[in-house]
Image (cartoon, rainbow, N blue to C red; front, side, top):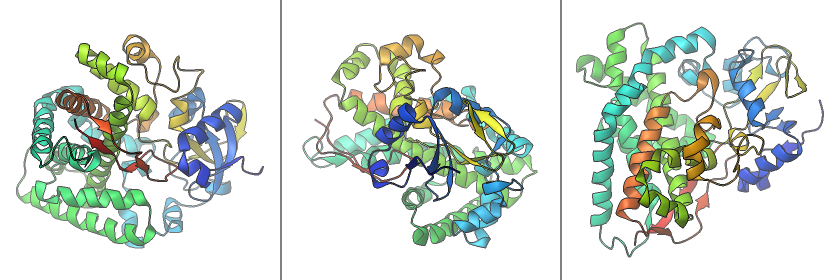
Length: 408
C-alpha cells in the first residue's frame, strides 16, 4: 500500500479537523490515510463518494470474515482497542455494529418511537423542558451579567432530558448519563472500561424496573414486544441515550455559537421565525458535531470515485468534508438560511449520515434543535461569547469543553 497521505492523529488535524478534512477534499478526495485507531485505510471525502460508500451493501461495519486488513472478527477488533471480554456482548449487539437483516430487524423494533407523528406529539413536552430550563437560567444569581457555560446550563440538560424521557431513564439517573458521555467522548481507556461497566449495570437495573413497573416509554414497549434478550435491550438503551444526548448537546452548542457569530441570520430568524427549520438543517450541515462516520470495511473489491478499494480494506467516510463539498453545495463552507429554505432539501446534507445507518432520531433531533435554539435566542437575543471556546481534540467530532457566554 502507498504511504498515508494524511494522519488523522496529527495534532494539526486534531486542532482543526474542519480545515484538515477540507484540505484533503481539495487535494486528495480519496486517499490512503492513517486513521484514528492507528490502522491505515481509505479516507473518502467527496459528497457523491461518501453517499456511495454509506449505501453500498458491500461496505460493512463488521469486519468478521473479511480478507486483508479486515481479517479479524468484530470481537478481535474490539479486543484490540482494549475492550474487556465481559463488555463484548453489548458492543456486538449495538445497532452500530450490525449489518444487513440483523440491523434492519432491530431498527424496525424501535422506529415507531421516532416516527414523524410520534415526534410531533413530543413537541409540547420538549417546549416545556426548554422553557423550564431557560427560566432557571434567567433566575440564577447574576444572570445576564455573569458569564455562564452554555453547555452546562442549557445544551446538556436539554439533550439529556429529552432522550432520557423518551427512552425511560428516570430523572435521578440523568446526571450519571451526562458524566458517562463525557468520559466516553474523552476516549481515555483507563476511564472508559469502568464507566461502560457502570452504564451496563444501570441499564440492567432499568430493564428490571420497567419489567416490574411498565410505563409509556421505549424500554417498556420493547420489553412488551418480546423477542429481544436483556443484553439486546441494554445495548439499545446505551446506544440511544449516548447518541441522543452527547451529539445533541454539541449540535446545540455549535449551532448557538454559529448564530451568535452571524447577526444577519439572527435578525432574519427574528423577523421570519418560520425559517427556523431551515436554519437547523443548515446548522447541521455546516456545524454538525459528527465529522467521521463509523469505520467500515469493503466486503468485496469495489471502485469508489475511480479508485480501486480491495476487499478487507478499511473505509473511513468523512461526513464533515462531504457537507462542505463545493461540487454539491452552493455555499459550501458558510451557512445560508435563506438558501437552505429555498433549495436545501435538494442539496443532500449528510449531517445525519446516509444509507441503512441513517440517524434513527433525525426527526426528534431537528425538532429539539429548533425548539431549543429558537427559545434560547428569543429569550436572550443579545447573547454573545465571552472567550474563544475550547475544543476537545477529536478527529471524529466537533465537541467543545465549554462555551462561555454573556446572556445580555
